[in-house]
Length: 267
Image (cartoon, rainbow, N blue to C red; front, side):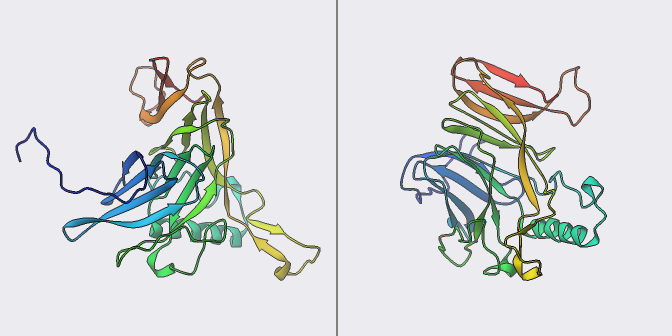
């Protein structure tokens, strides 16, 4: 193959509808695709061919976009908030260690007005854990199948279809944008209730249910980002102009039906 030519090495035909978006894993040979059929498919290269290893089911309408997390950039620390409870710190450390074993999470957005986060169940834990809804979101396909579960649905802020989502590789923040003209930024943080919720009138440990240790909150929201027009895409990028405050500072780049590209900073 010449330097300026490409050839087809694989054709992936797992979806039953239009494919809206694809995204490469930041560190593994994994490809994610989003589709009009309301699903997300994950593929890996097996021997000399690409094979579907998982089908993520949960969205109730077209999935427009997906993006990968960089697992080393979680934005969470075991001692965040000055917590002194050793049991809480232990649970936090275990969660962060499990995320390293599981690898990068995936975020998706849809016509169903939701932004969802998905995680892979580490092989040694297959069958031991389930997703937020209590049901695994997996279509087993072959010997290299993976189990992925829905971890969270982010706070609902969009009124119309969400077209784009981007997971910051620097801060761990997530940005979303859509046909309602909004850009929304979300942050993951430790829950204030330490992940334990009382579910009855009893005081015994058997009457207390463990909730997720983390939650997603909205930290910024822009309405009419492109005036009255739809926002088609949004992505995090490193800020490089002279007004940047640090080498790691990021901006959000958005595109809209108004024909403009806009740059945004978080204040």
